[in-house]
Image 1 (cartoon, helix red, strand yellow):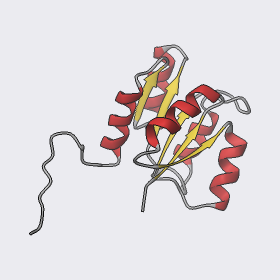
Image 2 (cartoon, one colour):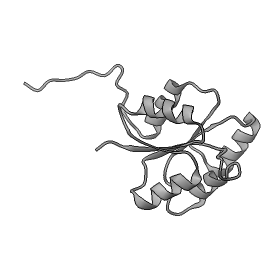
Image 3 (cartoon, rainbow, N blue to C red):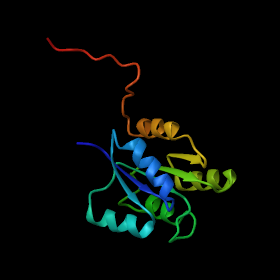
Length: 134
């Protein structure tokens, strides 16, 4: 079964980009805001990881991040933050909430994918040998 990644961002372009780079390896679900994300989470199983913007259109900055990381239900889910906020604010908030990884916009999607694989302990496809059973 493919792992589920929840992408939460108000940016259509970033949702499309992340869905495109993740679709080959993961089941990607997208939400444009906190309301959509929470509605999906209430009706489905938990995602294996969340990639989200710290600034969402329907909440104050970091509000959903705080909710996830202080909730007994969700705090175990790895979160990767993407943000256009000043780096000092990102670092401070990520330290405060125990965020697993963060990227400042604009970000390299390949670096993000590698970080996600590292957080989920997915072996890299590069440099591995395939053995055939005869």
